[in-house]
Length: 344
Image (cartoon, rainbow, N blue to C red; front, side):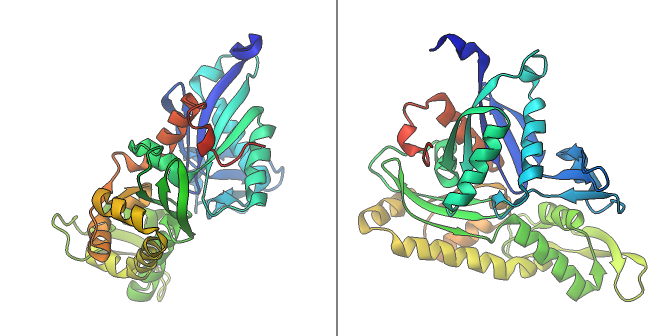
């Protein structure tokens, strides 16, 4: 403990394509959509998070909503930096400090990320006063968050379905043995729903409405034990141009998402086929763990279980599994030093 340690705050960030979560003192203090609203004329950021998400699809020409992260990596460097900095300012414990403390951060990144993309995350963090910045791969953070003992010589398979990427990894001895990162995840599911509504119902719906449909009646399979009720969807009729409403059921959404889910299944099968035999034996006994928002899609666990013939478990509070793991890693940095992606 150095003399100036009281000037340093520890935060763990799950910088996601859809949502950004921040853990401080063991508690999730920020949970907001990763979206920024910018004034086109002055270039100033008007709103971030929930406030900006409400503006999405409803802006006039002087306001533009941006999602700074695409497919799990930073696409708009400037906007992402401003967004991280504004989220950090929202942390209750840091709000009333009269000076800005330097930060020790652990940030999670997709496993398929390149060195350049890693550097971009690192630079963004350093610009917002990050003194020590550590990076951890998402599946690893998810495994820690679920409660798997990753240091054991035992194989565990994690499937983390986020907004931009689906991360599949087999973990043993505190390292990733084989992994696959596919850009099929929550955002692609949302786009599938937009496309389905256009082609099947001649109804043009926005991203926010499609997201709502996915959450309320989204399903990965047509034979659900507890089916959700049908939902009324409003949008613009592509033939007449008038606003209209249609009623849709979960079976239609299962059809719409089928192709994308097939690709996730294939990626899981491919990872299993690359797994060393001893670890495959462990996975046969422990099953597959699902984390991330996409794992909440109804019937997805059942469908993956049928495909792989393995038991599939969904993490409790899957949306926060990754950030929980990042927080645990931050608390026990010495124990998890070897797990971190790399320290520059």
